[in-house]
Length: 256
Image 1 (cartoon, rainbow, N blue to C red):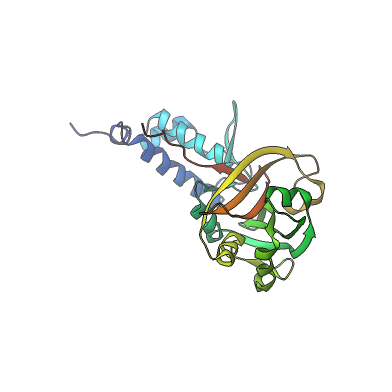
Image 2: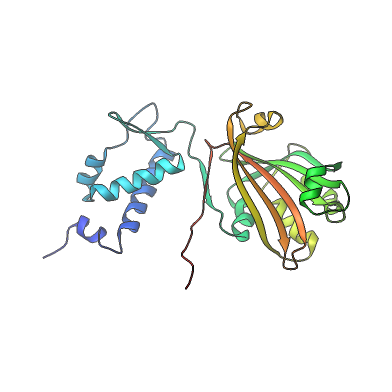
């Protein structure tokens, strides 16, 4: 007997494919403004009946879109598209992922490179001097700023930033990453980073850069990058608007 669509898609190996295909379809509809003006998305029951999918498959698709900030759910009313657009969501599980963030975002220089006294940053970089080279920039996705970053480099390495034309003009936007520039200046691959993630009140001086109010919770991600010889190359302190960004990476079980 021939299997119906629900049977074919909801086998043990297929549900991830089924719900992701549906999530992609709904995500595309939202981006094409099919559900603007408070128009409700189809319910789980409606999608299940129309597409021959199980309610569990449809529910998983909605859960993914809620996690990304594409839609929100109101008990008793339904599921609706967020008017400000989806959060920026990109895998960030490797240095290579961070290097390729320029594929679908833009960097805008807030403060061009400068030599400054930064006691805390110099200490975290393990320097014998209090001087570092700093550069501040923010990232845009689909025209909206979602992150502002303050990068700190040892002066001998950071001097090279002054020769990078793309970083010399405030408010200039480019499809590039400072991390790629740092790797080129260092002449050695970035081997890894020590990372910490915290929720903090938005710093007053950076709020306007990512459209948040002072004191509002933001996501802070600090990364200290190093090469294969554990030479520290850069400290990057990133502040993310949580309404426009979601951090996600896949964890696997350790091999025994």
